[in-house]
Length: 203
Image 1 (cartoon, rainbow, N blue to C red):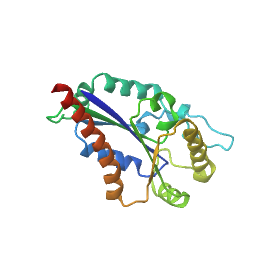
Image 2 (cartoon, helix red, strand yellow; image 1 turned 180 degrees about the vertical axis):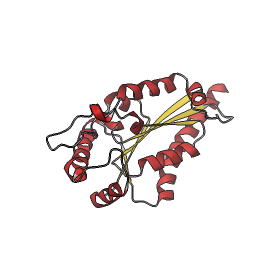
Image 3 (cartoon, rainbow, N blue to C red; image 1 turned 60 degrees about the vertical axis):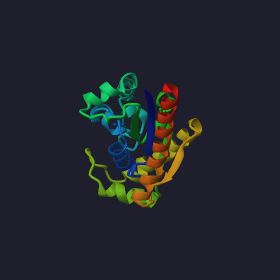
Image 4 (spheres, rainbow, N blue to C red; image 1 turned 135 degrees about the vertical axis):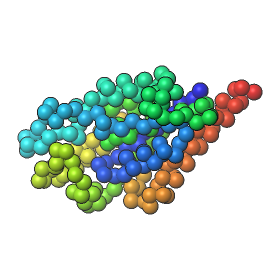
């Protein structure tokens, strides 16, 4: 049995969740873990000097829980799939974990586990427009994007680029099917190579 862990990162509203879900639906024996599911309770998220909630930092996330779930998958991918009510395909030789989130490449212990890293990026104006059209709970206060979200994105990206060197940057404005084909085909090539290795070992 072989395993692959793929990271789909990127800025807010950059298309990472859409891509990750579609890849999970397309790739056999895959599981998906989303960083957004690990936010701490609103009451414990700190506030900066401008009164903005600091959601765009690792301390706002239960990263320990996220890592525990990833380690559970690493120990037994088949059992993990069963727990998630996922049906494995007939070919059980390669299992894939897709990890999606806006700060996944800023967490050093997690970075060490990725076999492939993709980061979706879009321009400031498109990002702001998409962010304003979404409904968040709690909702973004006035000025939150320019006063916190975008500055924190630039800060987090700078930190990410300082600690990670093998990220594949992806244009989030590409046509969705082309974007999906590019990333998914890349991962599928790795899967096929691992299957070939398994076949060679059994011959």
